[in-house]
Image (cartoon, rainbow, N blue to C red):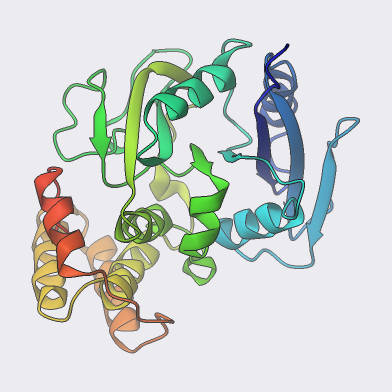
Length: 294
């Protein structure tokens, strides 16, 4: 008797601004073997200009940001026939081998405690994995596997049951730090994450600061993250830590001024539902190598 192929729901976002990368990403996705895929392309404020046969499309009337776009895609594929896993896939990434998704699922089957499996992301030209793509504090060795407490959200496999229990992405974040928010909620459910660096996915090594509002959004969303997910005594510790780190790292006075404007914006409110993690989750995260103050 043949074992049924694992069913994966795949969510891809587009703003019709990657005419070469997007078709290449979709071709690598649709070439995957030994898995069954249900794919949706979400046009974030646009009607998708590239929808291969057999792929669904959802058009959002306005650009609602990356996390809300991902939520819309996951919701479009929800229901009784939903996949066991959801794969969130940036539309400028490439799956370099036809068994990449099958390998990710196999890794998930080996680590049943993990709500999400994070592959290693590498630049296709240089092979370099940027430090921000390694989902742990000690990011010097990108090839070391292990339990992780955050994620590189642009390319990640998540168990749908855990994703739905956690409540999905924080849609109003628009961009940046939504993966930390989701990861912390998954850990608060008693779950973990797993980094599988032997499974490589290609993604160009672009600078996140290219996005308009980068410094404002990363500061604002740090505040929102703290207010939403941390026990009250840890909120000031987290915010002071990140203020000091940011002041040391951001060299431009103009950018630092924008960062502090974002900090003030976050402090004014707008973070949404407050559902702080338990102290036992704080302890588990700390034991896993990343206390939730940094």
